[in-house]
Figure 1 (cartoon, rainbow, N blue to C red):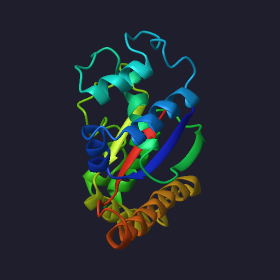
Figure 2: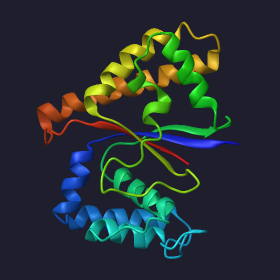
Figure 3: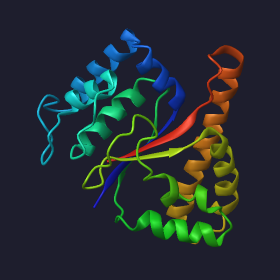
Figure 4: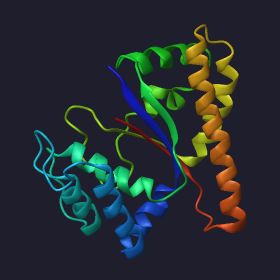
Length: 206
C-alpha cells in the first residue's frame, strides 16, 4: 500500500488565532482550497456523517465535532494548514507497508534517537488543535512536532542517517533533517520580519 506524505512548516498557534479571530480572508482561502482540491466536498465521506466542507465549518464556528467523521475533520484541518505557511515538503507516493515507520523508528531508537523524536511517536498524534476526532480507518493521519523539538529532530536524524543500512531509509531520514533546517530558516525570518510566531512540524499522510 502506498501513501502520500507532506511535512508542513506552520505555526499551530497562528492557525488557532486566525480561526478564533474570524480572519475572513484566511478562512475564505481555506474554503476555496477545499473546494479546489477535494472531489464532492459537500458530500459526506464514505462511512462518515460529515462532508469536508461541513467539517471545516464545524471547526470555524467552534461547533461540536461528530466523533464518527474523523477523516472529514482531518482533511478540513489540512485546508487550514495548507493556507497558513509555505509550500510543504512533498514526499510523493510512498510505496511502503503500514509497518514501515515503526520498523524505521526501531532502528533510529537503536542509534540513540530519543523516543519523542521517533517517526512513530509524532506522525500519528492527531491534529494538534480544535480537539478533532481521529479517523476510524487511520487516514488522513495528522502528525505534530512542536517547534522546540524540530531542531532536535534534525540534529539526531542527521547523525543517524549515515549509520542506517538501507540507502532509501538514509535518504528519507536526511529529508526530515533537511526539513528541520528549512524550519529553522523560517523561524529566523519570522523573528526578523514576521509576526514572531515560530513554526512547528505538521505532517499529513494520506
